[in-house]
Image (tube, rainbow, N blue to C red; front, top):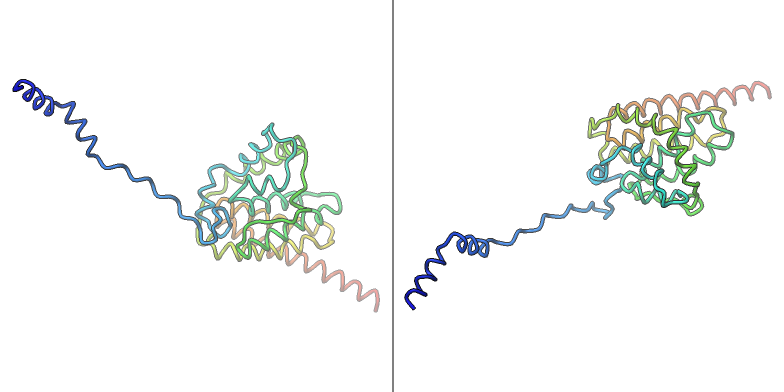
Length: 251
C-alpha cells in the first residue's frame, strides 16, 4: 500500500502528468469575433467601402477571366454577374455596360446598354443594393461569346488596373459614392441621347469613375469627374448648335 501510495505521488509529479493536468486547466479558446455587418445588412453594397474591400481580393479583370473560364456554365447572364461580383456588382456592371460605348459601336447600342446604366447609377446614388428588372437581368450570352469579349477587353482593363491603387480614401467613402452615383446617373442620361458619337465621352467618364470606385482610387475619381464635365460641355454644345442651326433654317 505504501509503495502504491508512493507510486501515485511520484506519478502525479511526473512531467507527463503535469502536462496533462495543465492541459485540463487551460481555458477554452474564445472564437474570433465575426465581421460586423453594415447597417443595411448587405455586406457588398456600395455604401460600405470596408465590406467592398474585403471582397476585393482580385482585380476585376482576373475575376472576369475566372468567370469566363468556368466550363460548368453554358451561358452567362446579367443575374450571374450580379451574384458573382457581390460587393463589386454596382461598379463592376457600370464598367461592363459603359466601356463598350467608348468604342465606335453600331447604332442603337447606346440605347441597349444605357438603360442598365440608369438603373445602376440611380441605386448607387441612393446607396441601395444593385437591382435590375427581369427583362435586363435575364439577358444572357453563351459562355464562349462572353469569354471572347473578356479575352479582348481584359488586357486593356489589366493595364488600367496596374495604374490604380487606394488613394485619397475620402473620395471613395459613403458620401462620395452617393455623389458619384448621381454623376453617373446624369452621364447615363447623356449617353442615351441620340447624338452621333456623343455617347463616347459620357461612357469614358463612367468607366473611369467605376474603376476608381472598384480600386478605391481617388485620383481616378477626380479624373472621371473632369471627363464628366468635359462630356457635359460637349453634349451641351452639340445640342445648342443643333437648335441654333434649326432656328436659323426656320428664320
